[in-house]
View 1 (cartoon, rainbow, N blue to C red):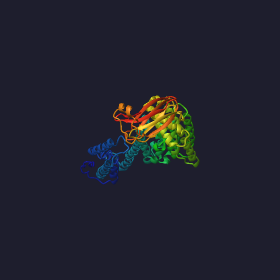
View 2: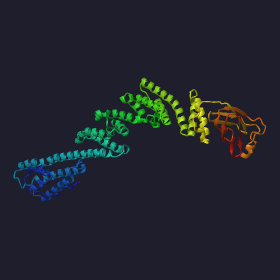
View 3: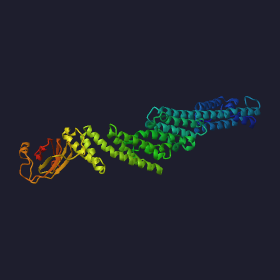
Length: 509
């Protein structure tokens, strides 16, 4: 609280003049102590001038928040005290000038325009300061949007969100301001800036920003956005289609991984872009089917497998679309069947015998009614032999069987064995374990005594054509050991093969 003016000495005796008292009060309300000045009280005048000067120092330059309520209340109380005190002193004290009290009253009324006008001007300056402050706030939000474009969207999203909050605050809290009037054009720029990757045909990069823009109405309201509400939709649908299309046939674009085509069909099921998905899937299947006949059938078949899964998993909003995708899935699965066989043949020709064996075993086990199943089984046998004896894989087995030369195979081991053979013909023979037979302690002992003990060894006789035949002996008992033998079969002879097990060394013939 500012102290009241110092007490003046008692007024000289004279007739009371209420008009003069009013004049002094009005002149003191100007804030400059003019009433005291006309009463010849310089000290009181100086106090009034100083107090008003302090108020001006505090108030200027005008700020949006203006002068605090406490300071303003104290100043008004001071003016009221100065007016009352001046009126009391002016009641009986003559003025230095003007000689007539009514003139002084008129002068006081005129001078009251100064503080009143000052208040009006100050309010105007404060309003202008507020407008400038809001425009600065708008400018900082605009700068946030501009600088955020240099960052990846994930890093820039907090800046975009902060700028949007500023735009919303200007519209809701300062609707009549100049800054708020500029928000609509800023929102247009906001959408254009964030959606720029789409205009640059960076469709995959545009998906996250466009999805973000679709959430903006939840923050600022549809009314504020107008036509911008639907601005991202068509762009996002196009981006999902263009970005998802190269993923057809890839393991990363199925429904379980949130593929872009899946998102397109669930988010915009009635869009023109969604209508193009099924034809694109069908076209990709046809292309992959052509690739199955090319130089990389295994890669083409993997693509076909993925296409089959994708066609099955992609949703169809309309019955016709769903049925078409089901047909695509069935078509792709048929191609996978043929492609698996082609892949196994290619692996065999490339000398990838372990892969070829697995592929052909899977093919034979999965497609039991396929016309190529029998040959696939023979290729699997030859591939297994070739893993131990690469020369056995120099030519692709055929479905041929039998011959004019007999070969008797016996088992002189305590384990059940399977004999695989390939050459002019390919096949396999299984023999039960030999009762009473034992493992030999050395290869030398086996070469002398194997199948010579007069026992009734488990045996089978097969017929082979002339030529080199490669044998692989597999123990299917506890040892799971193998051994190989290469025999040149010639007409006019009969051949025997004896399977045995050498302790610690595996099997042999």
